[in-house]
Structure formats: C-alpha cells, structure tokens
Image (cartoon, rainbow, N blue to C red):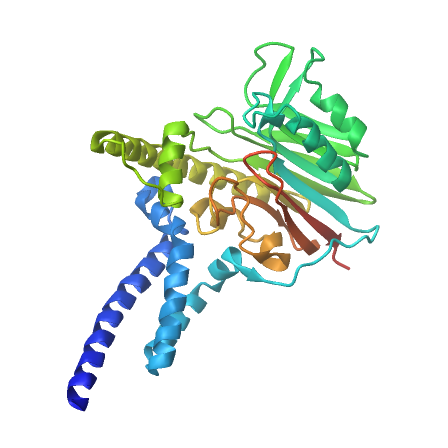
Length: 377
C-alpha cells in the first residue's frame, strides 16, 4: 500500500515537472520577446504579453516544490532572478506613498484624455468638466497629454480652460498631421509651470494619430528635456473589444458563429502584430534620440504596450521607471483590460522619485499616472 502510494506521488511529481518545464520555456520566451524586435519575429511579442500569467504559474511551482521539498524550487527561483527587472516592472510591494509637499519636488503627470471625450464616448457630457476638476485638484508641474484636442471656434476651448484651471502657463502643442483647417487640433500637448526654452517632435512613418514630442524646460539654472509619446495603437473596433471582453470576463460566446469568431480573432491578431512591429520601430527611434539628449530626461506617455514588451524594454534602458521605484501592486492603467500597465513615467538618474500614483477615475479609457521627482543632491 505504501509502495503504491509512493509510486502515485512520484508519477504526479513527474507530470508536474513536465508542466513546470513547459512553463519555464514560456518564461524564457517572454525574456526573448522583450529583447527581439517584433519586425524580426512578432509572435514572441504575444508570448511576452502573457508574462503576468506565466509569473503566477512559476510562483505556484515554487510553492509546490517547496512543500514537496524538491530541488526544483531553486530552478524556478533562478529563472525568475535571471530577469528580476521583469518582476519589478510587473508587480511591486512598496507601501503606499503620499506625494511629498516639498517645494523642490516636481509633480509629473501623463494622461491619455481621449480627446477630452469630444465624441461623447462616455455618454456623459459632464466628463470633460470632470477631467478639468481632476486636473485642478492635482496641479501638476509637468503635464503630458496624449490624444489632445482643441477647438478654436469656442465650442470646445480646451487650451483656454486648461490655462484657467492650472497654474501652468507654458504649453507645447503639436498636431498628429498637417492641419486640415485652422479650427480644430488633434495631437499631443506638454504643459509646464517651467519656461519652455526648446521643443521639437519625432514623427513616425506610416502612422496616423501617434507621435512623440520633446520639450526643453528651464529649472532654475538647469535644463531638462521632457519626451511625451504615444506609440502605435492597435485600432480595434467594438466587435474586437466585445471579443476581448468575452475572453477576459469569461462571458458566453453563444450566438456567435464559428466563422464570425474566427474572423474577429484573425483581425485582432493581424492588427496586434502590426502594432507590435510599428511600436518596436518607434521605440528604436525615440531611444536613439534620447541617447543624444544633452539634458537630463523625463519620458512620459501612452506606450500601448506592457512592461515585458520590446518597446518598453528598449525605452527603459538607462532610465528609471517610477512604478518600479515607488509603485505598488500591478498599477493597471488601461480601463478595459486589468493588469495592463501601458502608461509610464521614466526618468534619468538626475532625478529620484518618491511617489507613483495611478488615479483610478474612469474619465477616459486610460487612468492618469503621476509621480513626484526631485533632483538628486
């Protein structure tokens, strides 16, 4: 009887070891996915997106082998430690920190405002005003907007209102494309309470609605450069969003034909693969530009990609992520998909961060993210 029980347990252990081996292979592929450009082999980008799930599976096996008192526990730990920066960029256990009120601090915020709900996606005409109220209460020193919108006719006077609700008096605004008219503006905006002494933009090839701008600010005797980016969007429609919602929320797919299901899945994969490739190229372009910056750098924006992606890993090189240094939990920033942290604030060693906050007000499809930075003494 004892021998039979021992053999069953050994058989279970062998099966678990086989599953563990598969999970470790997947873990290594996420590391490769963050290092290999999607234009070289885009399927690895899909694997990299699954890192939080693979991390959870690896944690399970660590606990399992710990209880079984098997040496395999050390193998799993070793594979995690191999790229501990992936763990740190995914989940943090820092205690919640309140932003310091020290006058030497710089409060930086990035916010994809979704055109201030110009098209009334929220089906609530008060949303724009609630965004203004939120910004009035926060009063950041540096504010980076993606999907910015302004109307010169007086119907949607975004710039005028922002100047009223913020202490900020300096603004750098760029259109995504050449102006179609002199009345409406879609683009990027960086607002600052510090004087702007230089500015420019990095345009991307073969894209619409995505851009990177940089703004040079005078901080006392020093100059810094703030990059504000919006990397390639996936551009999926409501049908694909419904498909994602059904998967994420485990909803029934009854009533959907297999042909429709396959069509939605095929289109979703195609658009995501295209976005991976474009974001990889855009990240390379911005990273090379930042390397040549004569000033300390702050990088803000909507990456449209997770921390284990090639674009994130390329841009974070030589930089610090405010989430990794001061964040807590998973700090998801995209409203529709939990665990997706796609809005980030990076900074060079010239600064140190003492807080990281995701403001969970559903006024856009993204949450605003802020940090407080201070010059290193």
